[in-house]
Image 1 (cartoon, helix red, strand yellow):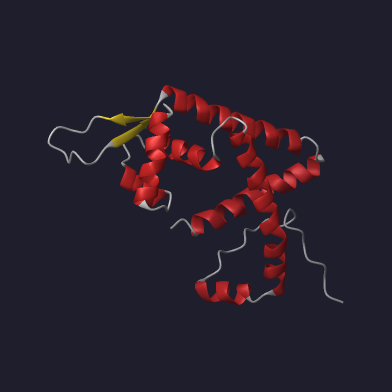
Image 2 (cartoon, one colour):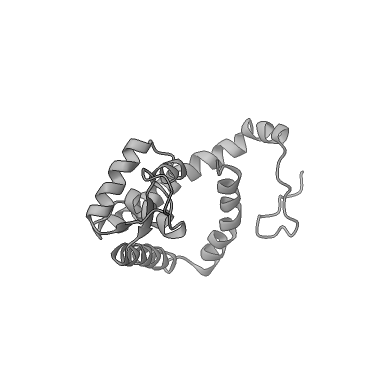
Length: 173
C-alpha cells in the first residue's frame, strides 16, 4: 500500500517551478485538470462578487481597474494605458474621456516641446477617493466572509495566496 501523500500545509520544502517540458506533462495530468476545473468557477464567482462591490459605488470594475493603474503610474498616456489594460486605443480613449468628464481623472500638461497629441493622465482627488472606497468595500466583503470560516480554512486560503500569485506572475504578459 503506498504511503499517504503529505498535505500542502505539511510540506516544508517548496516545490520547484516546473520547466516547460514538465508544464506540458502537468497539463495532461488528470489531477491538474480536476484542480483547474474546481478552481476556475470559484475565481470567476469571487471576481463577480468583488465587481459588484465597485458597482454599488457607481463605478464599473473596469473603471476601477483603470483608476488604480493611472494612480500607480501618474503621467501614463492613453496608448500606454490601453497596452497595460490590453484594450484597443480607441476603446481606451472613450473610457478615458468618460472618466475625465466624470471628474475621476485629470489630464496633465504636456512637457514643453513634447508631442502635443500625447496627454498624461493623473487621478483626481475624487478618483482617488473612489478607488479607496472600492478597495475598502472589497476588503470589507472579503473580511466578513473570511470571518465566517474556521481558522484552519483561513490559514488554507492564506497559504494559497503565494502559489496563486505565482500563476499570475508567470503569465504577466
